[in-house]
Image 1 (cartoon, helix red, strand yellow):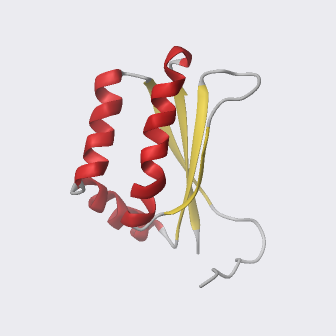
Image 2 (image 1 turned 90 degrees about the vertical axis):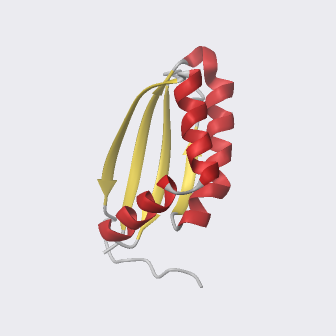
Amino acid sequence: MTVTCCIRYVIDPYQRDAFEKYAQAWLTIIPEMGGDLLGYFLPHEGTNNVALAMIGFDDLSTYETYRGRLRSDAPAMANFAFARDRKFIVEETRTFLQPVGPRQAKAT
């Protein structure tokens, strides 16, 4: 089974640039730690304070291994500290989704 971790961020819309910098850092960190980054998405039209990230994993145990790697990775910890210190993330929630229909084969 594959799962996608959908992270929903409520951000301070006046610090959108700081969140974008935070998201850009994850573009290299997440794949290095074992996540299949589907993307980070910033508000564009409509609601100005909700951003999303989507990261694929083979299963929940793969996700747990990934989370452990993040906690021992200096760039990841620095990015977490950047968000904590700047306080541009107001709320962060995770939902785990599975695809509808047949499982797509991964490209190698």
